[in-house]
Image (cartoon, helix red, strand yellow):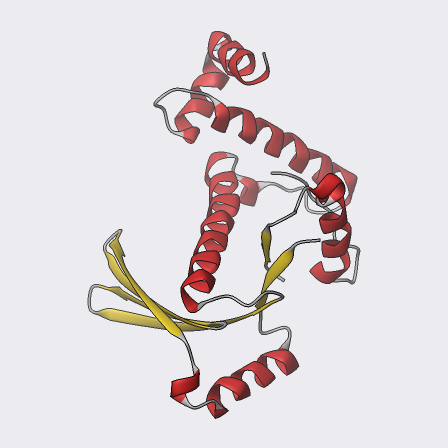
Length: 202
C-alpha cells in the first residue's frame, strides 16, 4: 500500500483519484508509470456498468470497426482446476473461463491515455487484476475484514491504516510461512512478533 484516500459521501472514486494521484506523483514518483485504476502518469481505467454512456460508445466502436483494424493478442492460462483464455483488443478484454464442463464469458472495457499494443494492454490488465485480488483477498482471509462492523467514519479509516501497516510488516518478513500462518504465529508468540518488527524496521 502506497496510499489511500477516502471517497466523500455521495461521491464516487473519481473524486478521490486526482487527490491520491497528485500525492503519489510528488517528486516524480509516478514518472514512467502506467497507473491502472478501478474506477503525471499515463493511466488505464476500467469502464464499468456505472458509466453506461461511455461503455455504450466504446462497444459501438468495436462493433463498427472492421476486424482487420483491430489488433488482438490471445493468452491461455491453466491452473486451479480451470482453463482461461484472454483476448485483448485495444482496449477490450474478452475472458473465457472453463471450470469442468461450464464456461463463463466476460467482456471488460478500458480507456488509456497512452497507446498500447494489444499484448501490452493484456499484461497491464492482468497485473491490475492480480493486485486487486491480492488487495482484497488477503485482508478478507487474513484479517477477516468482511466481519468488521466498522464501515464509516474515522474509526474505519484508522483501522484500515493499521491493518495495511500490519499486513505490510507481515508480508515483508523473510521466512517460508504463508502470510496467514505468519500472522497467527506472531499473535501466539511475542518472539515472532519481535523478529518481524526487527527485520522489517530495524
